[in-house]
Length: 100
Image 1 (cartoon, rainbow, N blue to C red):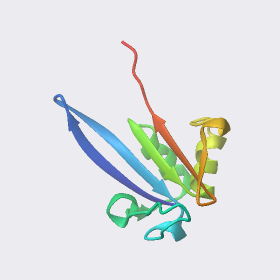
Image 2 (cartoon, rainbow, N blue to C red):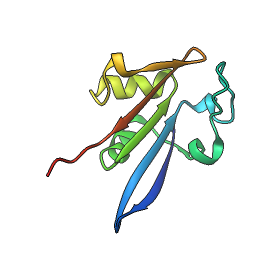
Image 3 (cartoon, rainbow, N blue to C red):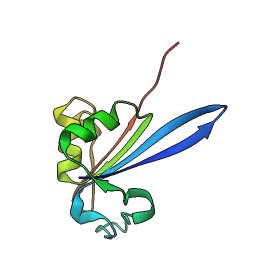
Image 4 (tube, rainbow, N blue to C red):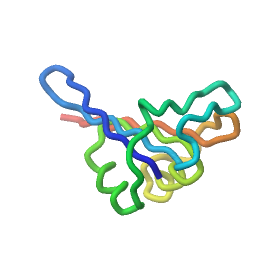
């Protein structure tokens, strides 16, 4: 899987947005015109263990691809009813909300 971490400054805090996709999807246009933009998704290749470590500090996760979305499903980070298909490819977004 390819993973890229984006740091977003918001109100004095730094939020981490993680873009995760299957290796073969970076730079591709999916059937519905969804561009797997290398500027957003083009990071480094990691194994499952390292991906899970990086996801643990994420505020937002944006995942596209069979392997990437399956990882989220297998670790209960997203429910199957919240996965959509974009041009036949699974896509999921996770937003972490901290309740005070």
